[in-house]
Length: 225
Ligand code: G3P
Image (cartoon, rainbow, N blue to C red; front, top):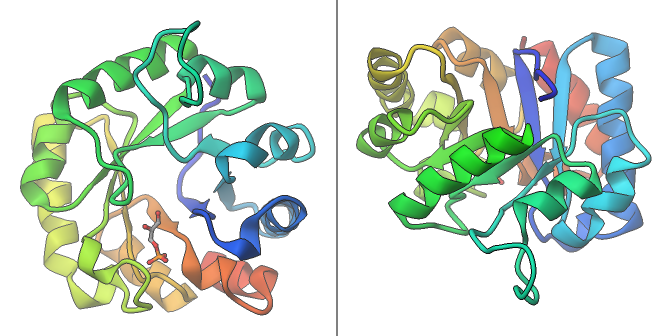
């Protein structure tokens, strides 16, 4: 498994038009340059159709945005963990707020990711779900209150209690899980606040993907670490 060094900035490019195809590759290249210049780890979650071609052209670790609990073989159109690995993924998001899964499937997908050497980032929406998730032993948990996603209102400032509450419960249950936060993060100040709360980094999307100068935003983000 590629060990992801923390602190880390994970960029989920979602399904925005600004991140499709060659535009997604340009975002990965911006992450690569920012990591080279700052020494801070960045990770990109390309659009599913773009993961392979981006992973083969960048040194930045690429994570899948989602994987499905289907068996290799007759599973037309599903996103198999094994296919993500073969395409060059180093990890995967699981249970993103925009792609929720059942608890039993989350458990199985974390286990399968580990067997494949994929770093698992379990997304959670509140303190209780973060605590439940910690018992499933993912590599990372990213706490993201859904109501702040895409708003530009940073969780690290608007709802610090959900971050510290998640951190506390997760570490009580499983001290090995790396805790991140996300939703509304777009500046170095937001990242600084997240780190000061005790997280090991952030998961974000629109603040970078929709920016006129994504590299400038990424440089600002890493300056908060
Ligand atoms: O996966 C990251 C995410 O859901 C947060 O989105 O646009 O608020 O940074 P955004």
